[in-house]
Length: 413
Ligand SMILES: [Zn+2]
Image (cartoon, rainbow, N blue to C red; front, side, top):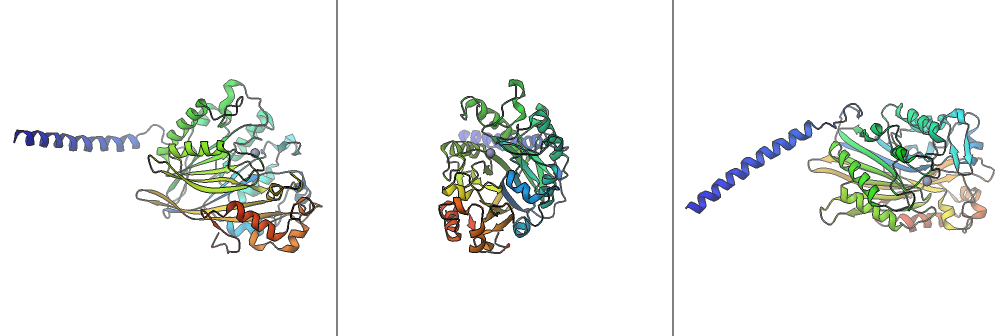
């Protein structure tokens, strides 16, 4: 009897403890000092579902300016891709910095400055989640970094991540709320081409590696851990943009897998990769301990580019003009979120050797005549033949993780 009574008392204590603990947990969450009230971009909740889209690198190179003209107008360049660019949340990587029109347009020799008018048109397309962490973000010096941040942060309903004005700015959570779903956003790059930051200015760029050793070292693991853990309780979907991997490679590098596994372990929901300039596969990774799943698009390729003879004669050079729009439906459920209907709509960035006829074609609308006129044609191992580029897309992307929209309609995409 006495033994039973003791167990009863212990049980009562445990129950009371649980009730108090849970209440404190809830209160602690509500009164968290890091609630992002002033930084959140809030739209009226209409449902618990969001259409998400992501594209790769916005790489404004020399050739496309011949087409854009003096007012940098994309004209009908995006028209056929528009049905696939209808997301509530749309992510892109602004590879070439919007560094200020007073510094002039830079479009070659690996130093870039892109006109503000170009960015205006990307905003008009609906992009509202912009990664600024990439190897060109320091191309135009401090004034370029300042201009870029001022420009993007002035856009209503748009969030950025990856470069920062002050240490406080870096600590400010980036949250975009759509249809009652809060998206948290972080962005990292493995390196920058220019390296003019002093030791005490390193906060200005979200580096994921030590610049001296190019390794994912303890210091960067700790920084990323702190930033993910600060943001995780404030959002439903945590998205991380990673500028990483090997240029021109269809293979996912070990260093990409290492960082992806770490982000998965920390509870990140989605990783959008850029920088290789070609497509790389998508996959789900699962933490063996927690069971947490992370969707990883290792590289989405160049959304905009215009270099025809890059790596002339190699298949990866063909893929420099191919990319895709990632799409999915994200639903907030009682026990978390679901990411479903994941599609990849392959695109051909079309232009001629004379740098005319720039147009972004979903692969379903591309044809043999157009392929025979592509500027890539004389450099391509297959003469950029339609069947060959379709095969290339299937070879890299068709692993059962995403539905490839090779022929479908916008509803499929
Ligand atoms: Zn890059």
